[in-house]
Length: 330
Image 1 (cartoon, rainbow, N blue to C red):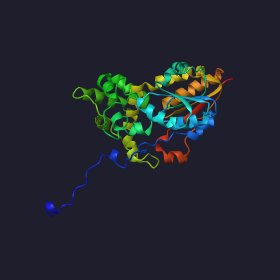
Image 2: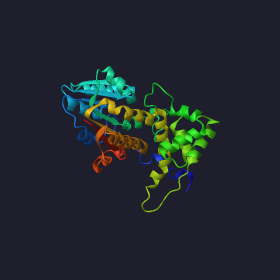
Image 3: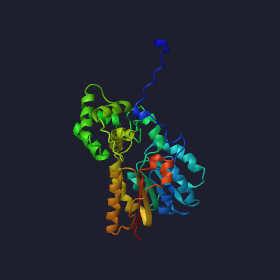
Image 4: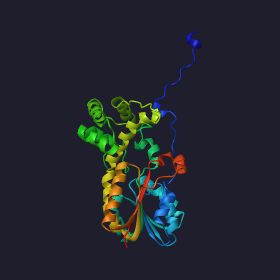
């Protein structure tokens, strides 16, 4: 067979790109555990409710409808790009609402600005929206090449690339280990420090390829092991998650919210927090447990509420969600 007769070679695609598709269509948003949120909060007309994580207004829209016509929804979001699209959706209800581009850790100041002392209910969905993950310019996902930004608020703070350029190996390793449960944290941090002596790591593709080299995966082929592709992706997923948490100080902000929560809830008021990371869930569980023992809360969720099979199938990114609730004592 001559060269002219040879069939064209198939273009190689990295394993992480195979079968990848956008998790959520552009402009579509699926609020996680919506029915379970309503079961816990039980919002009623005339109440004041806080959505501490506005996002694309999936939860906020339904909560505003529930407290209308004379109730009030107060919502905050770190991402300024979420505010105006959400405002358009909420405006259409005719209900009363106030939106703030702010961190929920400063909730008491936000309530004071609205002339509100305490609220009937609060929701905080700590997960990221699919649109944020799928936007390559934000740098949250290793699936698409883009700048290593990862800031929830792109108008302030240091980017992930900034941290990779400057943090010592020990701090990077602690980040990957504590926030991502990455077993090869030391090897990955050492590789980052070595690489930045030659060229700074500034794009998601560069970090992804470094992780593949620094943390090779030994595939478990036992019958109950996860699929090979999932095993290969795991180190990247853990490191990217850990960096995002560090960039946005997510655990510190959550701790502050948990500290101020008893002060912003009315007697009998309920708070619902949805987490997607084991470290977040541990903080929430401990704060609610301690509040129950101290008599601050009269009831808390005995166990986390998880998405039903139907929701996990329709929205795969909901699979790690855990909902916990607490009700303030009368």
